[in-house]
Length: 455
Image (cartoon, rainbow, N blue to C red; front, side):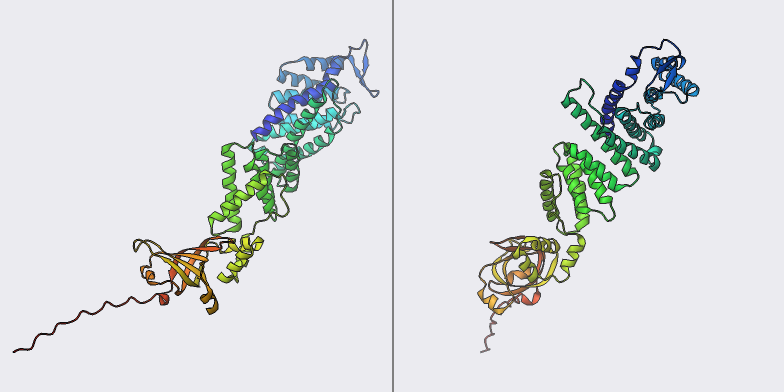
């Protein structure tokens, strides 16, 4: 989450400027009261001593000493009207001291103040500072990183900050485009932190909402897409297609480095292999490439996109025959895709056919290739003149005795196919049934010379 922290740091600086423009700097410009009291708004009063103690704490540049002055102020004036300015100074001082739990405490105190002078900008800063302090804290504290209560508190702060930001008015003198850019940065940072906090709690629906909020502003961010995909896969039951889709979005992102893209592609390929358990690796590669192309062109997954699961393949294999495979493949469409996933790499025994051509190997160790027409009846056998299967037979040298136009049965592993109009099944590891191989012709007997009769 280093990118989140970097983004958070930039946005934190802007948030502090936002609140200073509406808070402490305004008070600093207020003239000192001439006598014992000064209005702080809404009829509240503060004394000259109170005001001077505030000014002394505000002017202190050493954060540790500043905290002591602030603590002294709180002990003397626990209900001061100046708390709306004291708490932000606490937040900044503890931020400098890298005491992020204390930053969170005083951010919450500011947000919870029941004071009409705490406007939307000031409340936003409080919620936002809590959020950023959380993500900074858990980056260095492993115990805090696993604390669900701390995460829940941060998630609530993020939610409040996003809601409050809608009510923050653009500061005077800030250009519209600059303000739009800044608020966009705020929202991206908050959604990223919210997703992080929700993930610690295993609050997957909230994590999805935050990640999508981020991607609505920056749709091609590779790691956020990947993280969203992982969250969909963590649901019970997992939303596998959405999970695959967003991992693919990350892998195909133009913003991903070459190393990130490769890592995500390898990860996605393993996910797809485990999901389908298809026998042919080439099919997984084809599906992966198709998914990457689709995901690169669309933020949202089309409802029509789907991948058959291992259970789907097992169910398709139950009543599968080579005849049904051929019919399904020729029919095309989704049925053909499912059938091919289920049948590729499978071994089929006793496949019947008519030999159209025999291509012998140069040596006994080379494969013999049979061009075969699949047939299921005498009529089909008689009519067959064009092959629709090629079968590589290895380690069966006797098979070279099979002749053209012979009827054979073979066992083989289906490895690929060419669709219509030149439909062709390709088989490896073929073996012709022994009874279909002609017997080797016996060598002719040599004539025996008779010994001439004795004279």
